[in-house]
Length: 193
Image (cartoon, rainbow, N blue to C red):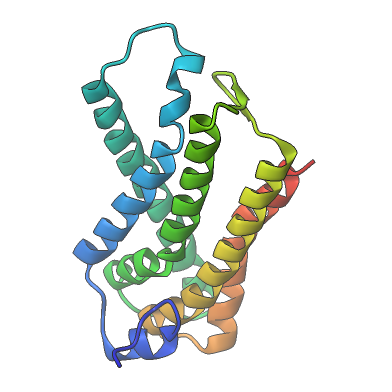
């Protein structure tokens, strides 16, 4: 059975060097799915009539911009932190491996989007302002728990992605992955309060 980064990241990254193109596709889908979660709520934040075409283009562009931003920031942080601890390896391979390591976010975003759409289509839409959606406590907790599980999973995969892209030992790559993942984990926990 072929290895997968989801369940066998050490073998996956040892056996192959993922391409930037494949990582880009993963991150584009991840970003688009995340941005699509707000589609049923657009009418709550604007009185302007938005066509389906405009909404689709906005979701695609928003997903692209969001995914590119997360990818670039993550890559730069990983590259710089691993340089400090003696890592070597190309920034291109680092970016490709990070893109693949973020694959669990596609599942997290899909689950969150499905729950938000389900709530919207059952007529129980949470109130929403331009800056914030007021989720019911159960939904906020559910999405936070799913997000935390996803980021722990990302951290696990990212450890091996960094190890193989930057040629650092497992302890150093785990430390760098922990720093990178700590930011969204802390944000998720803080959002509960």
